[in-house]
Image (cartoon, rainbow, N blue to C red; front, side, top):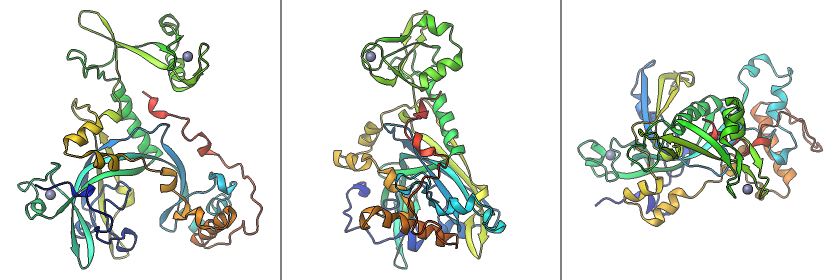
Length: 401
Ligand SMILES: [Zn+2]
Ligand SMILES: [Zn+2]
């Protein structure tokens, strides 16, 4: 019997594969969710040919909203912006030149800054690994069965090592994040009560009241809601309130109802994107840049869908796949996204002082844009640059529906 080796292989036993140097994709070491063809698949395609990849994933519900951070695109790659970072006092060399016209026109066109929204997910794909020319190469398995399927997948048939995709971080642009939120909104209108008549039905009439999540004191009555414009209802739902009874300041607990065929009103439990596998489909077009097979970045398109009525519990799903408690702990261990998306991938603890760390990051930004670090020997000062991260966590935007 083939065990899910992804969870049992010791770090020492893992093949030495460094994605950054070898440009390969080790699913267990590269903890970023990626969906696209491998290099060898791309090399086998002609320019202009399109590819399509799908993955089933489950998003993990964080305590607060998505992890938000700003990134710059410069020198052909993304860098974590520091303008909003608490240690940097508004200092960001790339932003400095980007916001000033002294940066040359041609270079300017290749610079951009944008907000990213990072979430954690479990990637339900499996991968086969093999060593080619001393390098680990990964291939997506054609079977989603925990034990593989020799009839569907040649690599399963040949007995190649097989690994579970597992826990990853996925950083989404605002556009893609909103795409995801639309799916979430759809799911929030679906009733997931454990009740044959109601499960999977659209929740109607919906919200009839709000109460304190701590002590159940009514904050908005059915009567009040009847005369409340829906925009106002929405904003009440999306903001925190102080309970007059217990003083707790939190989101209000919504009371929504759904009606049975006989007219009986039942309190409805809403679905969400955290209760369901989502299917991510990516498409793109092969191109050749400087003699190398690539996907044209402008051609990449994602669709996010949910299929059927298969709401489920993630932990139970993983147990059903044969995972032990230890496997489960490892797969579901929360990631530190602030660390995961840290500027220049540097560890502040390895520097004598925070300022030393800050200056090293700024120097690297300066060399990326081939300019001077304007903050050298500078006293930290605030640039009061649009401080997007200050609202990090407070948006709780998947309350949206
Ligand atoms: Zn396979
Ligand atoms: Zn209360």
